[in-house]
View 1 (cartoon, helix red, strand yellow):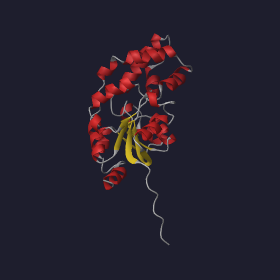
View 2: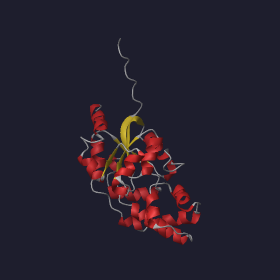
View 3: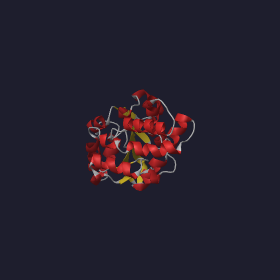
View 4: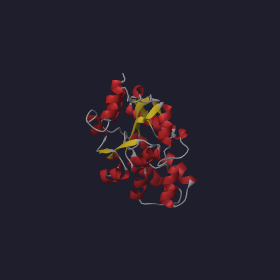
Length: 233
């Protein structure tokens, strides 16, 4: 009996890249900004506890950290972070990874719930806009990580096929959000979470940083997706 032909794919193959802590070294700057914003609002939390929640949306971060929201801390976080972003640097291999994924025919999407001005600053740091197919910002997300909204919005922005899409992130919140969106997630340790924590949460593979992903692009976890994209060109 003849096997039925596979159903046609509904979209492109691509990679959804978290930005803070994955491509750009900002997580500790965010922790510092939150720490100062909490003091501004008459609150306090230990720095290590703040860092453990970076990558989660600010609204959820405050609930986990304090047990209640604080509009003053939320607004002050942006003010406190603005002067710190000048200290941010792209991780080695970050821009090169974006360029190489694009050269293979994969759609590269920056999937973040950061405000537009903060994303713009990180895009300037990465300096590879021509290789980025789409981006998301806070304006595209109703519920922040670990909710799946940011990755669903990113797939829609670039018309990606979820069966041909992978997430690259640095936190357990990325892994949880990817899983909730029905996507596989490759994780890096550059955000401060350990390989054990990331694997335990469900990461398909864990790398030290994006440079290691780049070095193993054709032999590591991205290889099947890259081979598929190259075969379609």
